[in-house]
Length: 487
Ligand code: NAD
Image 1 (tube, rainbow, N blue to C red):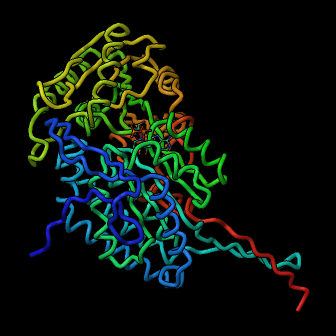
Image 2: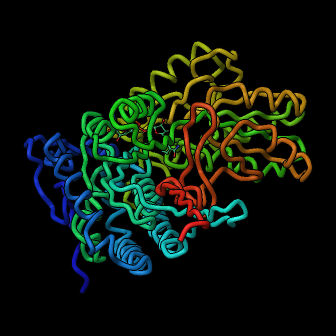
Image 3: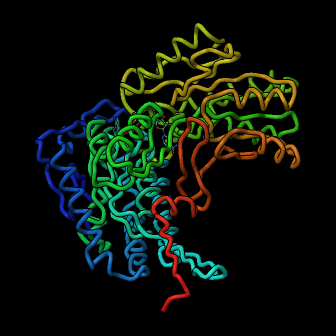
């Protein structure tokens, strides 16, 4: 019988689980039940981050990693993917009890993380360079080299996939890594240490730490880390970029928040649009960076559409409060009391700024559940309309013309993920081109694919994860010129 995948609260540094040198610990509470899960999660302080960086720096130069064939790196990544998949249910459970997203959703996320490792394993031995002819007497070569020690900082909403989006391309490129989980969801990723070992990665190649913003700051400002990839809010992203610049100008990728639009044209398949604007938006209780939280509906269909959207939000709310570990539960609580209070404060301000269509209240007496909520017709400067809420709170507005829809959709400082619903291919292409957004989905919510770049324009971020672009983030070009007239 396969061994049980046990809960880990220690840091994973240099191939070993260790207590933090600071002795500081963190507690994790299940937001569905308010029960304490553990108060023993080790918080990484300066000495721990230094130890992780030293281990990663040594591993980067060690023959057991630097000296092996790219295809052998791929083998370890493929084995790691198989191990994640074999334990997906147990790993997912650690995420569910820490941040509340139902087991069904987190199990899907765990499988997706395994697929990301498989995808990037395929790239490991296909990192080609370029050459240019010696037509001017110089033969020119561009080769792509790993950066060295890289670090990643994750948000809490889908830790396993954020881990995979950062670590898998970095390893395929030959780097070594230190990943910091969010303090709100440390358990799933920390549990991966034993699988990293079993997959055969040499000590120090992948290190796992946790802790709050102070730990993140230690990584962002570290002089021996060459690259940091951050996923989280815009406010924190700015701090990470500042620290990266002020320290050693480490390379920086920022995957930040959104306030993404969904435009529903009158010629759309309405049933399909309703599904994605309700269940699609409410996935993870709206705690998804790419969630389309501003829905624009063409006036001719608006009354009927909004009435049906309300019905679907209300139906989704019926299932809230159910056991998040039950396989049929689809919606969970907010990640913790802090996130609950934050979303409730937006709801209170929304009640003064817009008309409440449904929701706007907590569900149950225990746990951090908030009813799926819709506000209609906020003013263009309303806080709920301008700022990312990151909860089950959608805003609906109407439009008359395509031009107006595009203007409204683009009237934001964000630009992560736009969606539009229409049966006209030409309109789909025209509007996709006009939307200021890193990704656009036609006739569905945006669901990132590992094959295509994911990331934002404007203040939703800098750089991309996934696809070939995600790999190139972890490589530095080196130009070599050879004077062909000598020798
Ligand atoms: P957050 O910014 O509060 O925290 C994110 C991470 O940064 C955590 O690990 C936290 O410990 C760490 N951190 C906090 N202060 C830090 C500092 N000064 N220096 C370095 N690290 C620090 O965000 P959150 O509440 O965890 O996540 C929600 C946000 O993440 C939302 O804005 C959401 O849109 C965004 N997000 C974006 C994507 C994407 O791919 N674009 C994906 C998921 C979530």
